[in-house]
Image 1 (cartoon, rainbow, N blue to C red):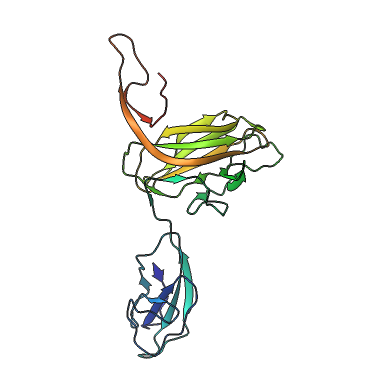
Image 2 (image 1 turned 60 degrees about the vertical axis):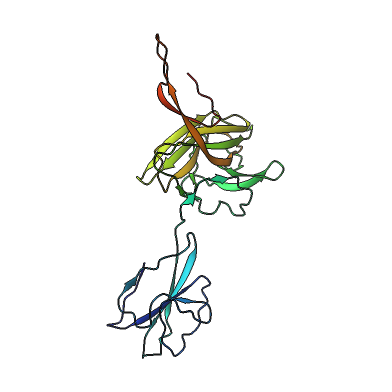
Length: 272
């Protein structure tokens, strides 16, 4: 939504582009959908009244630039003022996966951190394998320190879907007692713990956990609570996979836990 403070009942012309290069409006009448020489798209007619306008149909995770001109006469305009804004990321659709191999910046597009604790960044290890490091390769122990959440882009998942999260961890031998919290955030708000992993094995390990309370605009976060040591704990090969519902019950005698309808990630083990 664009808002501005009009001068009295002054009419305005509003144009938009994604280059921040603007041309001068010619002495003519413009209508919504027209273009200017630098490719600007007119999003309001040349005689628009008011102090606000909704601009729709924009791409997600993209910066747009606007210029607002006052109408001085029927075909002449002021020099104009500019502003800009970046749209939020659109929900990505299933299937979803991320292995960081094509990431050239500290984080994948549309991933975020909560900006608390230490940083998260994509690094290269082991014969050019890219992973998302949840710690820095420093020399201090940082016992008990909390690393920033590494948060996925929003994922469009139907309500109460039978799905699971699969991912790998990589832990250097010089770390110990790290605890990894996998969390989720749905359209109802708030972060909730999905799974807690303690004493993560050295080297590569695969993990699978069933997604809970799925909705559109679903985000997954990885938050590390650092133990002793100075090495790195990282994640890789994140994927949303199928899960299955098993109906578990005991025989004539005894009890069994878990029981009832139990959701299990595809290929995962279940302990009774």
